[in-house]
Length: 158
Image (cartoon, rainbow, N blue to C red):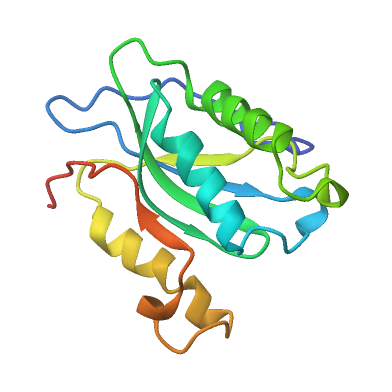
């Protein structure tokens, strides 16, 4: 059981859910919630590092000015845990960040939650992709340029 003073989420091993993908929803924030992510060069930098990952596959994602929401799945049975993978790409992207005055880039840790059997990936995605609309950044989700899908993740809807 988590202690009340915990500042960062506990990490668990993914539950094996048979023939379904182990799908994880991750949120990563910038240090002090600096609004530095929603730019074309950062979008390209992050996409590049996610495409090059041999450990985890990134499905759909949305970059907000100060945080990222993404869905991901292990690339194979021997993938590192999600915490180590997130730390890896955060370190790699920070090392080649396009504007040094914006560093340090990332908040410590990340929040993750495994999508469970019976939950809908598409319903969760629709909620996430509407974040820019709820934040008043665009009038419709399709207009937000800082979203995408690196790898199609197979998830059979309930």
